[in-house]
Length: 103
Image (cartoon, rainbow, N blue to C red; front, side, top):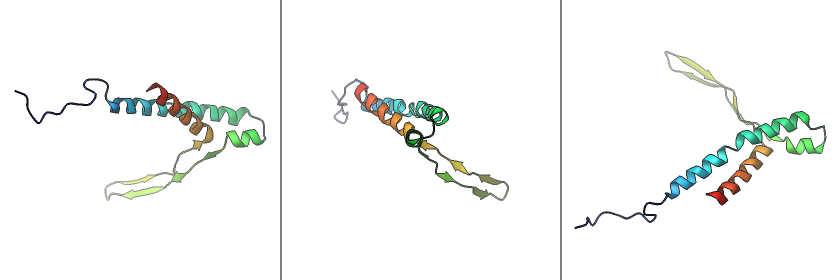
């Protein structure tokens, strides 16, 4: 006799949809470093002009310094910055569409 509370999964042994989502996120996040590398190459080797201004545009938000006094230890962190470039975002968008078609 079967237990009435047991639920069958809709994919019944196939790869779960969570595994597909994780693989797509890993693939997409793997494209940040190549985009940053291409950004730094273009920043270094492109001549001055509008192409260099457009392709090497980036935003660097910063946080800090953050000071924590824990009575026993005093810690100061910062400033912490994140450099987000246009080419890194383009690389992530391309990776997203490739991952979407593969996974």
